[in-house]
Length: 439
Image (cartoon, rainbow, N blue to C red; front, side, top):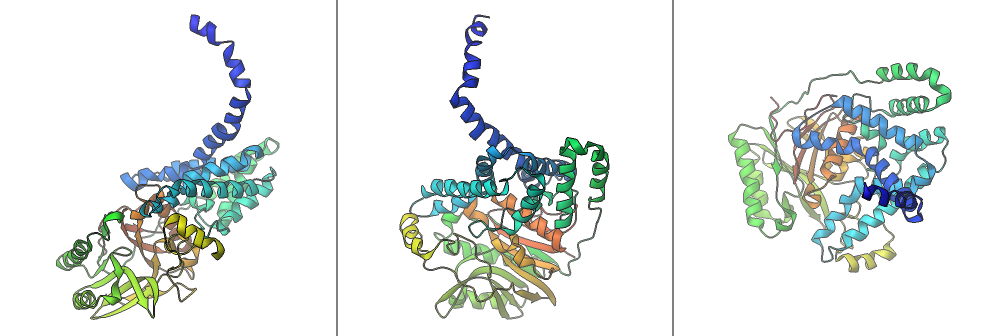
């Protein structure tokens, strides 16, 4: 009783203090709303780790996220975007752990969050709900620092709803109708209309071969320290695939962490083994002094390759003016003057076992540009050890699922540092598999 009497006069003073009001306006409320907005992403942690799939719950939280975006008070818009930037993209900085200046990652996190704060400041500039329908609909077409990973539509990826742009706009319009008191007479009709936007489509996965989608867990910091062990490990994966009767084996991005076509002994061994099994593996490629991040395909004693076309910002090129690059090089300890190159602006298809696959290396599998012409099959290889542990593999999974459904593409995803498997266009989940048999 004494404590209650003692503190009762103080509580109103705290609530009315400038510090508390500022804390509530700039941190507590914006962070809480940003966290709820991000639940569709973080809910997929259970899908990723536990293979738990709940499309209806995902759909409900996706609707809540859209509701928050449509109705959030303008005064919170910068800090709302700031915290969304942290919750969705803090992992971008984690690759700097492997540089000579690892502490720069905190600066990068802050910088990225500020950029997204400004981005949301503009997206939510007007409180007019029609403007916000427009802004959330065009957000997926805007690349921030070269990344097009903020795709609001992708929160529907693991939900029961359709994922095409028209459906997303209609869902957003329905949320607006539900949230406006002046239109409450139409709320029941709007809820009924939501049922029409449910994706009832089901389809069987149809793959022509028995394929081993390998998963490796080689720590990024150890990858270059034990090259012989890495090489032996890769060949053991290939030999195991042959022994188990697979026709194709897929190894992750940079599974051989060096310029593969300059290693004649290893190339010859892979060519010899390719008479027994088709080998698809990621490594670097050199041509006339230019370096490429590539997918190699060894088949019937010959090999082909597809270079990465859409390079990852910060990882493979710098999305900043050249005048600032030298300064950043000195601060970060990374030589960005020796970027990877690309010879094309169009994604390349590969043919194996008379089947055409779209090639995608890591970031490419999460960008709409790689899905041009709606490929039926895609082979995606990634090295997620750069960002492990983080939300990055879950965000990557969500984006690939979104594009797989949007373009009706079956994605075979082999990774290092995260889970491998298949991401299909089906509304039901068949992703979390370590080695998937396609008979």
